[in-house]
Length: 221
Ligand code: MD3
Ligand code: FE
Image (cartoon, protein in one colour):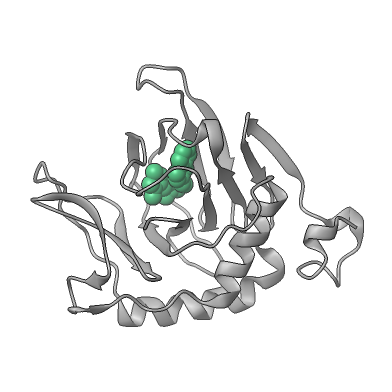
């Protein structure tokens, strides 16, 4: 058994360990990596969304995002007419964002370690909800203070087709299907690659219903 997955997969046979697929020089898809703790994650996520509900934020250009967003952790990502940034306060409630559940930060730390990034301690988790038809256009993630740390994502619910591009918008994108329980780690030389999500296809997930939720764990501050 791989030493870094010892705790998380203690009850599982080695052949049931998640497969790691390399999608970039320093980027990995970890199929099903979250499944062993999914029954702890989903109630923790519902508790966060009860305190910090999903909302459709307005981009600086004045467009409402098709994706509903919220956050947990010390810093939460927000956007309004004055731009994109991280804030310690949820502007909807005027309160700090809900704490990041330990099951989530530990899972992200283990995923990052599996992809070669030691000591990943995220201070922010952005929660994106996609209903069928919602998408995310190609963009780069540049609002974090530093790019040394990777970004770790966790996909839940309906499947998505993730677009993994290059360093300029016009570079050809790879298409990578992401399923419930999959995790992806992007870092190092791949940290500033363009990426996006194609419109979600209609469907119903047994646990999440008619939606996809994606969590991205980051070192934002
Ligand atoms: C690839 N979210 O929140 S996963 C985002 O599925 C975002 O909700 C998508 O893009 C989603 O910003 C994609 C996350 C992701 C985040 C950062 C990356 C993929 C990345 C940085 C570089 C390359
Ligand atoms: Fe992004």
